[in-house]
Length: 476
Image (cartoon, rainbow, N blue to C red; front, side, top):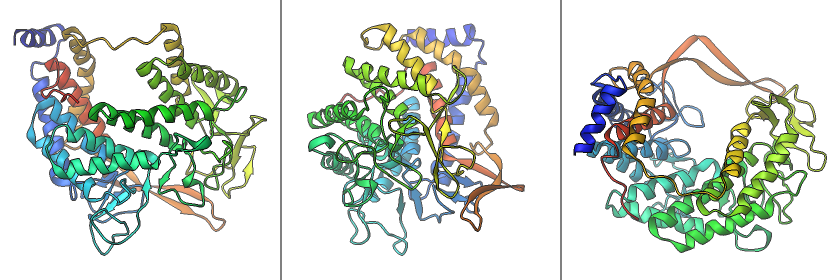
């Protein structure tokens, strides 16, 4: 108790904080969560964005949705994780109840195959899916866009705090799905497809790095191994990391493709995703391999990143050394950047690009290279240092200005409202798509991603101020 009091004194005096900032941060956190769980939630779930009246605009990666539809991808799991962060920071059972409602929403929408589609439909007349307890619809688990992975990670973490048979059963089905979906033969051994059961035709049944699909599978199985002591999940991680090393192209193009055929050659996906090495997904692969190097200390993982870094340094097409630009796709062999026109003709020029896809960007390459150089210079990885009162105090000091900004921007209902022009995709007679903004007709909007980011920041500040979470992580 004495050390906790001393920490408060340091924060109040040494950091120059208003004495009431922690109390205001706690009130802002509670207000935000109460509004999101009590007013925004539908069946315990969420979509991406809402107009403030919750009806004029309510969208996931879709057109406007009825209240019977909630989103899995970048939706319900991440909001549930934010509620868990609020619960850990405060110990308030209301936040745990909101997380449990999100978990039960996901458990309801779990497919018979063990994973999830992009959305969950609660209206029987609109339901197109084959949930494990229903008797109609389709049954395809998707690993695209961290979909099934994010739902499974959230449910596993929630399962540590609640004793709920519905959540436990959903976790068991999900883990079984991952293990069954992982390839176990030949060149594909250890990889995951984009969808399960894998379709016989098309790219969705191929080993897929696109949108970090496989990296998210690795992170999910590693968490399962940690929380449940599952050696089979740990073995699945090792086999997949071997696939990362096996599927990397040799120098001078020591990167990866988005997806692979049986001969480990790049394969077509959508009509604007050609067989090529990729400047985007290869960054995600490097990040994952550096994570695994820090975790396991296997030098093969860092060496693979080093080979890719050499390619990135030679393949920049614009920008500066500190903030470069790379192409999404490079031709195998020639290393020439590949692009598409708005009518989807494959070309070498970037003067008529579609607007719905990123064909050029930084993709976080410079940050990835900086991290690689730091790891390479540091030598063998060391276990993280334990947190100290001083480290918590320093974190609280660093976060305090951001907390003031968040609280100033929050309205009386706990929302962060943004006034934005209505935006629509418009297609011309030749099939070209463009974005139109209606600046004269703006909508007050709230966003799940903003809610999650702000709640996580408030929760992190409270944990730092307190010198640790109010609710300790359960031991696996």
